[in-house]
Length: 131
Image 1 (cartoon, rainbow, N blue to C red):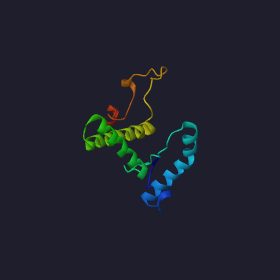
Image 2 (cartoon, rainbow, N blue to C red):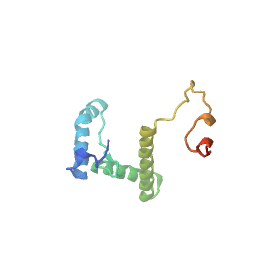
Image 3 (cartoon, rainbow, N blue to C red):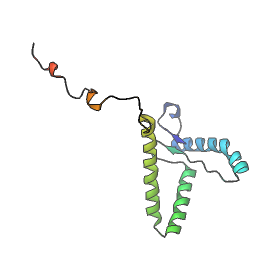
Image 4 (cartoon, helix red, strand yellow):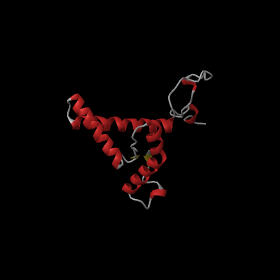
């Protein structure tokens, strides 16, 4: 879950209250199904658009980084840095996709040449002609 703490609806709450609220919502929504049907554990991952993360998400990242550091015999700090970078770019990529749209196959019905499209970057010659 990604929250925007600067939203008007969250004006009266602190960032820690928002993380706790959304973690509890996710637990209430998914905990029973995951435990009963999937026979697994559930950890809600709550992030903010400002770059922060909830208490359980921090614990999750620390645990995964520790396990990877032990397995690969690399430094914990290097693993954590890599994980944070990957997370940052993944969130940025998803934001760009939601704003710009996903890149996919080209629409085959579109036949216009790029040189024929006016982006209004170069003024037309008649704009500078004297009459």
